[in-house]
Amino acid sequence: MSPRPPRRLLAQELAAAAAAYQAAVVIPHCAECSKPCCRLDPLVLELEWKQLKTLWQIEESRNAFDRRLGSGQGPEEIRAGNGLYYAHGKACPAYDQAQGSCRVYGQEVKPVGCSDFPVYEDQGSVVADLRCEAVDLKALVAWMARAVGPEFRIVHSADEEFPFLVTLSVKKVTGNARVSKRTRY
Ligand code: SF4
Ligand code: SF4
Image (cartoon, rainbow, N blue to C red; front, side, top):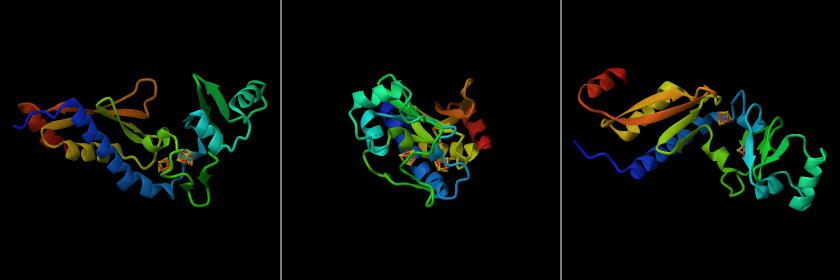
């Protein structure tokens, strides 16, 4: 039996597997998605000031923009909080609706939440957002199980408050549990 990979190494494996799943399964579906996440409904996009300024093509200073937003004159889809900005209810300006694609794909200005959605590694587990129609939970569990190998099994649980957020945790297989894993997948 091989020793358990260090936690950091396992997290890297999970992050790589999540990214590979996105590339192989999710992204190819985006152009034909019936509920594109870039419409930001019901999703919320978290932005730093530079990202907001670039994507929304804001000319004024941050202070001036904040004053405008605070007085109710700013873009109605933007809210400010905790030093960040949140866009919701209107399509992201970088979203090309005709092509069903992102105009800033692969660029630094693209918010990290866009790259993470809908499957990403978080603190040694993988989180899947089932609001993305391309995510098949059963197939994703099998994908992750293949990625980490037969020494581990994948256990998943839904968030109590937001059940569309599912966490896939990695558990060491021992004794009888190994038998149950073979019958499960
Ligand atoms: S919801 Fe999923 S499939 Fe649809 S555009 Fe977003 S990432 Fe692509
Ligand atoms: S930056 Fe790109 S991926 Fe992110 S919401 Fe806008 S169009 Fe979609």
